[in-house]
Image (cartoon, rainbow, N blue to C red; front, side, top):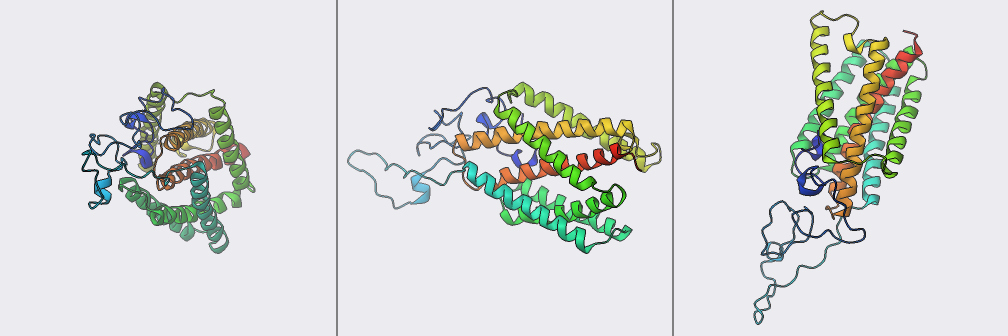
Length: 304
């Protein structure tokens, strides 16, 4: 089963292109053994390429490469160092999240709280969604698309945050602190080994997440047609708080999948461009957690 995160929906960093190999551990400091278990392994040019889109073929790169005709063997492909590292992921994530923050600050400062600003925020959110979907279906990472998504997502978050702050003073700041706390705690728990991202863990979590999204979609329709009042499951009362807590827990679940896929990508030598996709996935997950945290802070403020 693949991740529900659209960034990783086409090719996973994990073994066997899915979560079935989560129980296998790579050897530290060296490449994984075998190309089937390692989608980024350096394969022989005469071996079937199968699930390894990054296997190096010296003839595909240089049809005029000199061959050892005496021994009848092709030359070995030169070792490549253009592989994703943690520094790459951190740098790209900082750029993407920084773009979100800049967009949010500019929108907060330039746009007053009004119905027209809310309409602009919805428009920015739709544009961000379009960019996210386009990137999700592209074969390669596009930094321009990812940063454009981040900019428009920032505009949406800036307007929404300003609206919450006008009614619940300090809510955005508390939501930022809450998002950092959830992310940091999830990372610490993951690194400590208290959570093992296995195939079973992923399947159960994704099933719950899909059911949660379907329930929210049905609730949105009921609210739109006037069947459910005061937002239904997304009300500003105790029921809304419970739903918000569940949403934040699901956000932490997606963070563990992101951490695992990044870890696998580094261990198995994913190309450096994949760090943009890792940053993209982390950004979407953190935005999810922030929005839910913002609602939760407002609900517990109790000043509606």
